[in-house]
Image (cartoon, rainbow over all chains, first blue to last red; front, side, top):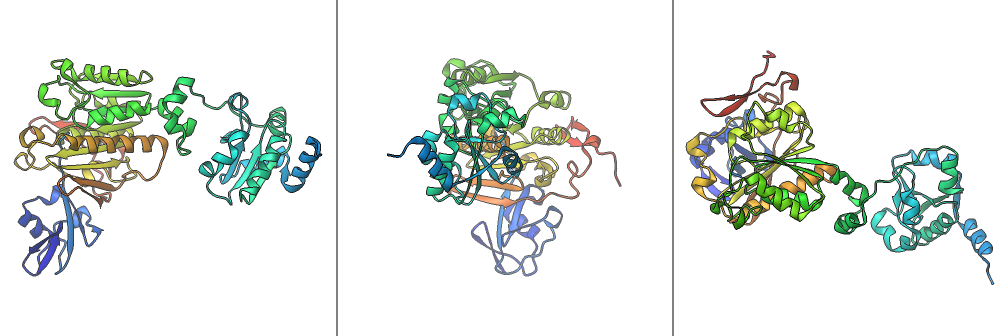
Amino acid sequence: MRVVANGEPVHLADGAALVDLFERLGVGAKWVVAEVNGQAVPRRDMAARRLADGDVIELVRAVAGG
Amino acid sequence: MTSFRDLLRETKSRIREIDTAGAETEVARPDTVVLDVREPDEYQQGALPGAIHIPRGHLESQIEARVPDHDAHIVIYCAGGTRSAFAADTLTQLGYSDVVSMAGGFNRWKDEGRSWRTPVSLSAEQRNRYQRHILLPEVDVAGQAKLLDSKVLCIGAGGLGSPAALYLAAAGVGTIGIIDMDVVDESNLQRQILHNMDRIGERKVDSAKKTLTLLNPDVTVVTYDVRLGADNIVDIFSGYDVIVDGTDNFPTRYLVNDASLKLDIPVVHGSIFRFEGQASVYLPHQGPCYRCQVPEPPPAELAPSCSEAGVLGVLPGIIGSIQAMEAIKLLLGLGEPLVGRLLAYDALEESFRTFRVNRDPECAACSIPKEQLVIAEYNELCMPHPVGVAAH
């Protein structure tokens, strides 16, 4: 299936979860804030959240510089 | 020829008047606009609580900016009830549908022992300095006086702390605390605009104090040339209204978060990396906290610091300015602060995105009562953690 992450198309295996996308992008679930199709993903659902073909994901990772 | 008496009688026949007792009932309703049309020197000596002040000479030109709702219920008063009668007539002509004049005016109101207050006042210099704030009805003299009476603590006098502190000082925030234990280095000047060539080698807090005091002598700058730690954070934070977090590492951000929860002080968060910046507002126990958003810090290999990875110097200028804006909004109760929202800025795309962040009901820090929250640091990991008395 094909999803769009921060505007870029990403191909994932059917039945993939948000965590698979994070792995593909090299980011850890615990330091990412994400929305799927405009809906915030609660922290506890972050890893297990299933994705579907065509989902639009926006994500941002925590930074700490000042 | 129409005499003054005739004119007043005709005017009063066109408007509605209420007595002071009736006005007192109406003034107590939150949606009533109380309008004082006397001269500034009369207003300064005492006015009805919550009254807005537009001298009658400026009424036509200012009313629509100050009271945009033409159906608002407006109670007008002056000293004795004459100027307010003419003012009520004028507002009716301008399309205001629900206007009354208080007969007897402020003099009768005061004689009858009804409640009044002395309006907060600014010096002539302050009125001039903050003129563009005072012109905003949402700020006005009362809002400016509130800023002058407010205390904001900036964590860090670096990339984010520089623009944040400069704008807070320019805005007239009366007390600005600055924590930083560094000295000014030439490599700071690409982005840390509080400092300059003359200050190289100087303590950053001292340099910051000089810059801010030169900008605005109304501001008291309190400096903390210390490392913020579990042992001193509660003492330092106590008494501040808002914390502006512009630190440069994850461990301090958790420490700031936990102390702010303990003390119930809102935190305006800002963070930057290379070409990306983020800002949010953590309102203790009302919105999510920093740990709801980032439950644990990334491992060091995934979290290079700006000193290793670089940062475009303008970036902290943008994020730090947003932090100053959010701090002022919190102090004045203006608009919608970034509570439960993470604003993410991408300089290369030149785009802002807003992410919704929810409270985590299982958050290690904000889901436990603040009395049970113990502020601690893991020494070996340099990682503070909340120690909750186990609730389950």
